[in-house]
Image 1 (spheres, rainbow over the protein chains, first blue to last red):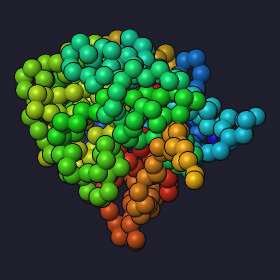
Image 2: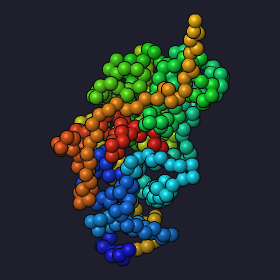
Image 3: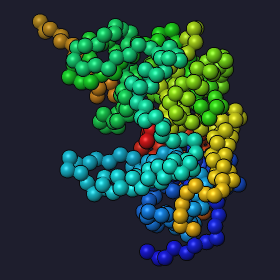
Image 4: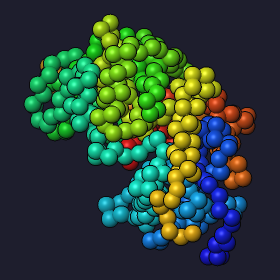
Length: 326
Length: 71
């Protein structure tokens, strides 16, 4: 590998992403005042890197550098390879092994940034993992949560109407994903693990709330605008999510829930009926740009501001909390 | 007479595949560190593409629903 040459010290935002992530493009358009190094995991073969116990050095094909000591903020977006999923034999494969090693590096940089207080907005919770079971249990202290049950064999305690859901988003085969579907519990094969939830038949809207620090950006979608139970599989190409208001009590409950999770960012999915909101889940790194693609509601600027604040905070801190390679 | 025995549902039977919509062509510009997108040869701005449709986005030709991606 050609030797790294050390350019003058600069301050930099490191973005961990993939090359087709246009949300990163949109956010970076609002951070033009920062020097940025975009580390695209799908293009990993085009980069050079060096990481050791003291520092890291990254270089892209334009010879743009990123040094540990120059990084004042790190923003984690989405780590997708291209293609995102590959077939892996039971004995493993070199491609799968390589992807895992590369992803470990990207996440290692993320973890290092969290350790040194440079990780902006999207970060793991300091209180551990928040799978949906934990989310729903904790959320019930702040919101109505539709009754749910995870079961195996003929042990479902709930009665119809129910929807089947999944805890993850693994593909089931041929690219299929188990979406939210209305089911009768007696129809479900007892050979599989199931996660079902009471159908909120009176719900009139899907609501999603992007939580950017203390700022909340709420949007709604009439359930009459799509078929079935899952708006993600709408039969129309255009979903019209529009900004909506939250009552002071709802906003307070959301902030208290987010505080309980330890997340700075989250996009909470909910349902609304005549009596208010029902909690469904929080997505700790959920997409958001489609809600305000032209920046009319302040959501994109709020994201950019949160990132810039971390960058500026590091710039202002003295002595530096991190790195030893300068 | 046949007796119709109802089939019990498996997760695969409840699966759905994303609707077929045209994939966007992406070209990465290393200088600007931005993605240039075209659909049928026409340039598309990221603002007009948003994240495509809600939480769905393309990676290559694979349409991905990627909200639940904590770590």
